[in-house]
Length: 607
Image 1 (cartoon, rainbow, N blue to C red):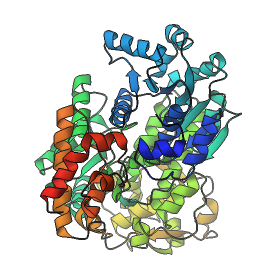
Image 2 (cartoon, rainbow, N blue to C red):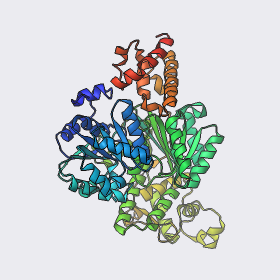
Image 3 (cartoon, helix red, strand yellow):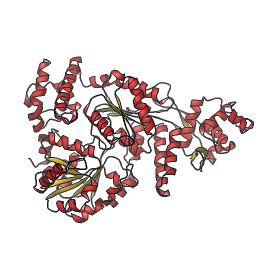
Image 4 (cartoon, rainbow, N blue to C red):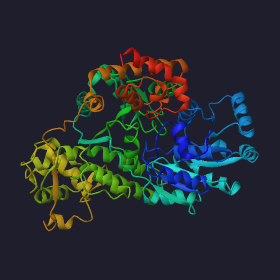
């Protein structure tokens, strides 16, 4: 095995050069330094510890929270000739014993373990008999109570440093705001290490966010417009807030001709595992899921992530949307949201057993996400600023607010009317009721409360109901209205509303675009890379051969080659192994193992 990082990158992994700060991080870890690394999903975090593991003597111990993530990583490493194994509850005792012997005898380069197993006295004692290259703590945000996926078992990982103080450690995560970063450094005792922050920009992802009207038809329109409808073969993830919504949406998508599977914590473990395995190993499946699904899923060819409900924070949104387009090819992040989503999420926060300080942080995170939804600006700029990254000032040109610039208007009077009506109806009703009053609706509830006599009754007829919904969402995002969770989710005036009520604070509001952004479809985006129709046929033939090989081995197709590598084959049409070896993602082991099979497909297509 070669020991120079760049040589390993090229000969083992088949990549020609490092990206971003990878080389700097790798050199720091090889030299024995500790580090916290923040990189976006698909940014190449794994190489930051996998290459040092092959450069330093001994075995690298990788802490991972999910069995699926371990299996993915081990399969991918085995494909490129790296000696890797996993130890978790799914491994039979005999196989686990063999892995521990290989670990002790120095026959492994990397071993993936769950935190619970790592921290047992027996396993720590076993590690003391091994030569250790490094510890890598993946999904490090799990250690922080401010993170979006807190795992109590991660809190004990600092004791590894106490027991093995000379072994370098690297903690890695794709999402962590300032408080979460500080929490990770403190809880893992990494304050003496270096912080490496890569760019959070994922330029291949196009962001679409729209108000929720009829969510499922909106989703269907998005899939038809962007991904070729049910006849397309794009893999995707659809996130819903509740288990019932997951089951119902998956069943509804199947009636529309899509191959869709459900995934949530209320399902039997075997069914969840079976559905996840199908999603990883088959092309063109849609996984409909709660937040129980996704962390550590390395499937690179997920072409879209859709949200039918609002997630709880920008971190959660970024982590989930980041599962699209890990291969760098054009992908979409689409979301429909509404004020009822905010009410539900606030209720979850209030009903939790978290301390008040943590609840306040969660409320602020939700407010920041609502601000992203209602922004007049480039969405990518808002995302980058949230994570402390200074954008270059230019709109990205690849989000809905850039593709279809949002029209704004002076909403000072509209805000005054809305705030006044909330006040005069007693600060106890939700937006739907207050809008009825503003529109002068003759309803039984209005009559029951005698609100047709209010001075604000019927003063808002210049706007439609949908336009008023937009105004109320924005007033909540601005903090001028607050959802009162001590009651029944009614609206009350925010602490800073006085100047707006008096007309002393000008309020600029967004007007929903009349037309939907017209993004390129899947085929149009792909043919920006493949110039000729014949290349598309070759690409599909290469995908079919890859699927055959994957089924023979029982592994996901992408661990053989990513779509981006197949696209390069279809574009460049190499005719011998030397030419094939020059393509991105083809190292020595894969060239030896698969070269002839894929060259035969290219030759058969007349290249």
